[in-house]
Length: 164
Image (tube, rainbow, N blue to C red; front, top):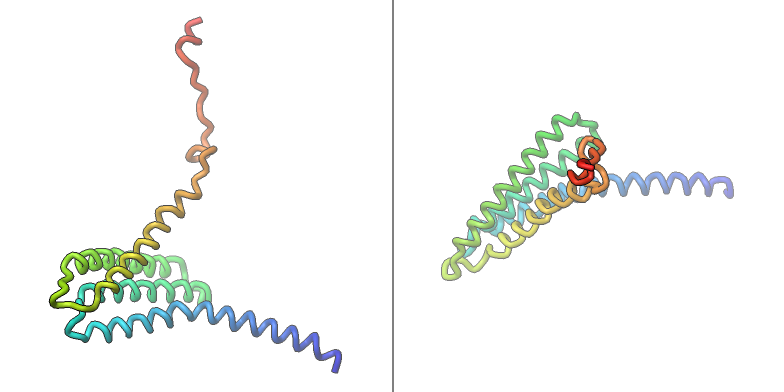
């Protein structure tokens, strides 16, 4: 009985890692699908601004597309070109969501609509997080001590020193 304990621990450890791995792969697609269904249900109400809710719905569709691409790359070893196509679709969804969120907030009428404003605010907030991460991410990798293409700067002397 004592010799089975290390084997049971090893099996439990590998299955826990596998379960965590599959949980990580599934959380974004499942969360996106649930959010899309909630948005679709919210759009059916007469008092909801459909443009505002569409902004969040399109962002969630883009998030679903990108999470499927990442899962396909990791689990199914998809080629980079396929993942790149999904990335372009995600960028398109983010851009459309930004535009719809701005239009939805600009045209939101409190007399006609009692719902949907928060959806547009959430869509704009989430899109802003992604856009800022795309701007700040590459900018944070720039090393100020090196120049582009690893070219050493030429030595510049002042004209007063050259004239001597």
